[in-house]
Image 1 (cartoon, helix red, strand yellow):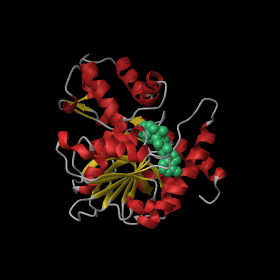
Image 2 (cartoon, protein in one colour):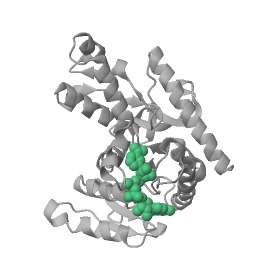
Image 3 (cartoon, helix red, strand yellow):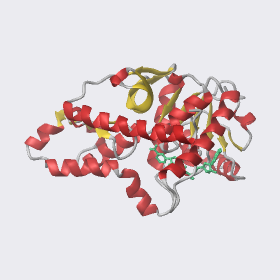
Image 4 (cartoon, protein in one colour):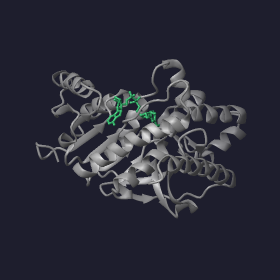
Length: 323
Ligand code: A3D
C-alpha cells in the first residue's frame, strides 16, 4: 500500500521504453502510485518527473517517483518487470539469455526482500524462460508470478483480422496460446467473428485459407515486424497496454480470462513449466488455469511450442545450474 494508504503501489522495474509507457498508462488510468526503478542513472527519475508534470493537464492525482533503490519499492501491490537488455548484432540467443538471467536474478533478490506479497508480471524476454527463472530465483508463490505475452500476441492477431475483414476489433474473439515466439499457437477453432466461427467465414469465401495462414504468420512475427521499422528497440505501446490489463484485473479483482504465461502443474499435460494458457486473474493472483479442449492440430502445435520452451529452459539450466 502506498503512503496515502488508500492507493495501491505499483513498481515498474526497468524504466526503458515499456517501463515509461507503463508508468504513463497507469497514471492516466489512475490505477495507483507509481515507483519507476532502473539501474541506469536518472532515466527513472526523469521519466517519473516528466509524467508527473502532466498531472495538472490530465487530471490525475497519483504520486510518481523514480529511483535506483529497492527500499523505495517496499510493499508494492504490483510489480511489472521489463529490466533487461535487447539483443544486439552479433549476440546469440544464448548470450542474451545469459545476460537477462543475471539481471532477473538481481531483480528477484530485490523484490523478494522488499515486496514478498506483490503480484508480479514479467515482460522481459525470452519471456517464458525468464518468468520461470524469476519464480525460482525469488521463491515467490507461483500464483503470484505471471508472464505477459499472450494478450499482446492475441491483440495483434485480432487487429490483423479486423483490418482484413473490415470489422471492429470488439466483434472478434480469439486468443493465442503456447510459448511467446515463433511457436505460438493461434486458436483458430476458438476464433469467432461476430458470433461466427472463422472456419465458416473461410467456407463462405469472406477470407481465404491462404490469407488466414498469412495473418497467423504475421502475428508470429509481429514483434520482428516492428523491430524492423523502429531499427532501434522493439514494440512498447501494445506490450505496455497488455501488461496494464493484467495489473488492472488483479488490482480490481476483475477475474478476467486472459492468455498469459502461467505455471503449469499438470494442466494441459504439462508439468513444472511456464507457458501461455488462459488464466483467471483476480485479487488472489492467478486464480485458475482454464483448460480448453484443443483440436488435434492445435494440440500438435501446442506440444511443439512446449518443446521449444522446455529446450530453452534447458539452455538456461546449462548457463545457471542452480535453476
Ligand atoms: P529497454 O528500453 O531497453 O528498457 C530496459 C530497461 O531495463 C533499461 O532502461 C535498462 O537500464 C533497465 N535495466 C537493465 N538492467 C536492469 C536491472 N538489473 N535492474 C533494473 N533495470 C535494469 O527495453 P524495452 O522496455 O523496450 O523492453 C524491455 C523488455 O521487454 C525486453 O527484454 C524486451 O525483449 C521485452 N519485450 C517483451 C515483449 C513480450 O511480448 C514478452 C514485447 C516487447 C518487449
